[in-house]
Length: 324
Image (tube, rainbow, N blue to C red):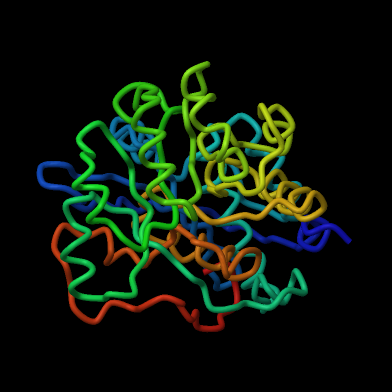
């Protein structure tokens, strides 16, 4: 049985839904806004989180409230079909809430529904290079996912340790993207011979310097469904899996199954989830790729100031019905 077949027919009763705004300062002068979708029915609530980075999109969404006609009897699959016209981020918010509600109404955890065991989740921290020393002082065993840039001198690189993934951000566009830099790619790949090399911008020059490291090249921003994997320039050894990019539960679970069939390792990624979405990506990591360098650290690791007493890797999740 496929992973999606295990959940597609779950009964889902929806009385209605409402929206909850979330916001948090994640860097000095930068406040991130999110929207939590809360589906409710039969005394239970299912929650999902929209992770769109456009604050105006959240404002428009929240103004509309619970106007969409979702009340009634569904299966998870029939409810998913109602989301076909949504953006991927919004569709994931509704579908993850629906999965959460359907599981709670059935008194099942996601692991029980899938027949998979939840395991402690190994995680890394995605942070600015300037923060690494402070994190190391607090927890010398902490491991990192970092974004190289042209300010990475040889001295900066030499001072970094415990780096599991470097994200070149060569696939992103606009303010989140970074232009190709063959010399930077070469220095970083050689300095961290065990790290995954994520989302390089492949040009003749960068492809040349990364050729000896091809097996370590992974992809993130381009991956929204299995067909995107088939379109990659070479078969990957590993991929970053960000559930909210897939939009639908079916596309995500089919992707998990196909990667397993092809021997492609996965590690989890996040989108600065502030609410239930954070727990959900941790749950998925615990079921599908618990031992990987998952960028799903507890949200306290994304705070503007270091806090004491944060959970350490591997993260042990409390058993719970639902999808959070």
